[in-house]
Image (cartoon, rainbow, N blue to C red; front, side):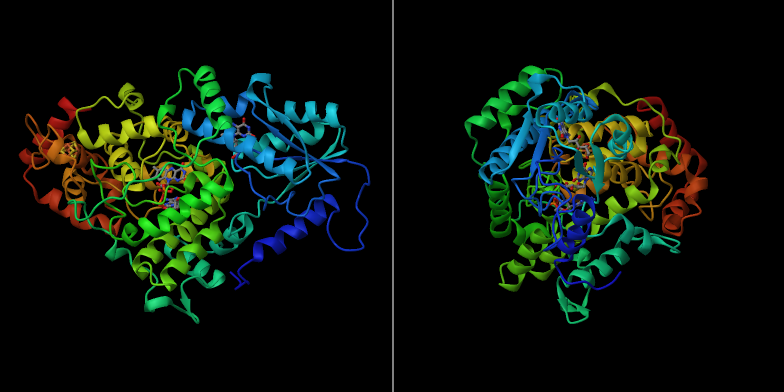
Length: 536
Ligand code: FAD
Ligand code: DLZ
Ligand code: SF4
């Protein structure tokens, strides 16, 4: 990692744009003088920092935005995600036209099958001899795009996505020669590189990481602020109606739609968070509660991932809140670590290891996904809450995703592919580049420890410690076997027992395995049999 000035992304992207479109440097002739460049903007690239838009001359390009069947159906996306993207795309088209761009927009009703078909249609309507796209976030689509040159008349150029703070190449360089790719070390380099929360060349406050202060469980310690709903205009209401009609079998209750669909409204969401929730974010980051689906979380991943917010601006806004004294260092550091560290790190891992990454199944997990994952109907209160909320709102916070749903899938040995597909379908912020490492790697340990240094496996005791679900549950978190025993408990020990050989190679599992081995044969058998006969 080189230390770079904070706004390096612009300079990288100017180089790409010049290389790709001939636009840019003073005095340099543009490659063509008539309106000959088509720019395809994908539904998750709705940003003025888009590498082809950033320096495009509205008089010379035609911008293509298309709601197409393939992208809307390659998984059973949550209706919240489809409505958010379609409405945000339509609003972005309006903003483009206001800035003088010609826009070819294809609504879902036109039933264009693919993005390639949309480009063909746009070419037939607004003839251009070159098509510029920004590389997509998913491997699936990147593979397709690489065949477009052969399929399309105009030449096709794919630009680097410079909206991330670490390029795919940067990550690979960092990864080179390392035995383990631990997020913490990547994150420290990113802090230095972007001079975020730094005091000269040292971390602000003397420590890189305040995670130890960020683990409080929820016992109703303070009031959870009511979240205002972003404004909803006629365009969004029309999209909601259309999505309800076109996707009757998808998850998602759009009567609860509460997402911003413009950059301005997303910025307001971030401001609200910085004022009202950020001060508590660190402390209750790992908390679980019956009282609120949002707690003190940011609710910004859906905006970051579709271009309505920029990651560096988000980190700078949070740092500014800390510098003004509006939140503690632990809160600001905890939040910046997520955006500057985890988000960039998982994207780096994804591109570093794909396509093989998707095929990993180290623990041979193959139990079919229960149908109730699609309804939330289970007596396990914590899980029912997390599933119902995920399906209905398209949102669950990190600990629900990791330690309630993911933990259950890990302990029960649920089929890795099916679980990953469920996560990709259900969340409003889900794209494979971020969903896959988090699910396959972090939650399911299916990559054998590339991402996590040990499995995130926990019994009911952890869930009880972190929140108030157990009080509302018909199961007893203290019971391991017998009627009323919390299923997480025997499943946990079943997991430890069935993977004891593999786990024994992991020094971080030594204590747990030692404790399990010290039990009597009868005790171990009773626990394993209970899970086998009643749960698996
Ligand atoms: P906050 O808790 O407020 O965190 C702030 C921001 O940090 C998030 O908006 C997000 O951009 C970033 N962030 C935090 N943790 C991660 C992480 N592990 N990976 C990447 N970014 C992170 N995040 C997605 O954006 N899309 C997904 O499809 C997705 N799938 C996940 C699946 C599993 C199994 C797990 C364990 C996590 C997943 N995450 C995913 C990461 C994380 O749970 C969400 O980013 C977060 O819950 C979004 O809510 P928020 O904006 O309120 O986040
Ligand atoms: C997720 C999604 C959906 C539901 N619909 C569209 C669409 O109709 N048009 C579009 O350009 N993009 C859509 N997307 C986002 C793409 O699937 C996304 O660009 C790829 O998955 C790459 O990240
Ligand atoms: Fe979840 Fe077990 Fe607690 Fe019920 S008792 S809420 S299943 S951890």
